[in-house]
Length: 410
Ligand code: NIG
Ligand code: FE
Image (cartoon, rainbow, N blue to C red; front, side, top):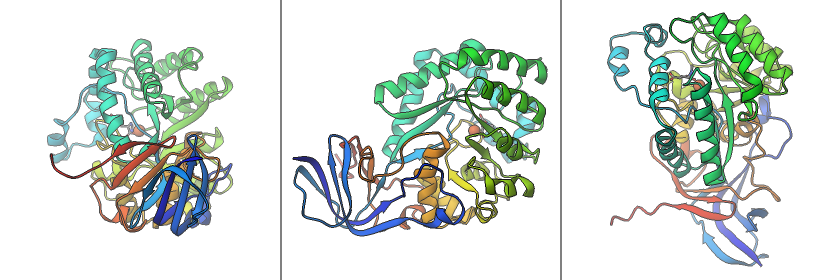
């Protein structure tokens, strides 16, 4: 006997199972079954496809008028951090730029101070709340970065909190070391980078990936290359915050270093975008950040897709440049500002987001883990359209309903 049948699904979204990220035109290909059925047993998908009465189960959920999809994956977050930076809103209103705030010792460096001061328990509580918010919004796969310690003790404190969360909620999480996220006050970029490189053999036990913020006034291309090479030599996969504000050639470096992803890419060069053609490095685009930094120009997602690139989209949830952990909101921004089609958006937050962080997730085909969302929405276009609110009605993890939103008032 099966455990669960989801029946009468208005639209069942079935991204393709694939070993490689979806690239170029493949991103617009998505199977959407009208009047679908999903069958689950022992936490795994037994069947997903057109309506069938063939199966029996202990429990049936009627999804008439609803959309069903794989649970979403948020492939770029700074989940674990101390404090908040609402005071920066006033500076932003006065036109002070993100990099200028950082130069003045604010921005990332102010979160570093708060994260150093916070106890592991305080960090855990705060990150737990934000993680649960994500889960309530339909996310069951999360990448979580360190990077607000810039010292051994605090970076490890962040990574341990991240692991504790993954254990407590038995979640698909990937943990990323982002030691070179900023240059601490009074230090030189090169010597601090060397300290982070020397730290990699120890950090390897706590982190799946090594990441770096390659940007004007932060780390140069050469410093970033040395770091990525060192991580690669140790067998760690690498990521890079690349070409977010200035076009330094971060995307080209990511491809050269076989990064699993290159993230931001708002200012990526034509040459970098061209090189995506022959690369499986996933361009993780973070349009919520561009929105929140109040910029006019967004990443050239269309150009990357036209060049047969692989793209994913993610929140970049952090206390400064993108203060939202609602991936649905970012799907709406991607529709408007990156000009992605609904099919591209769904692939970018499921299967390709999983590829960007090396997760076997983002699909609900036979044999897959039954991580599913039932959406209070009549069709798949609706979610990026009706923006800023939560459309996830039920979130199902390993075949169990773990979130069930009932709007009835108490
Ligand atoms: O991805 N750009 C660098 N790092 C983060 C922002 C971190 C922060 O402002 O606290 C990002 O946008
Ligand atoms: Fe980031």
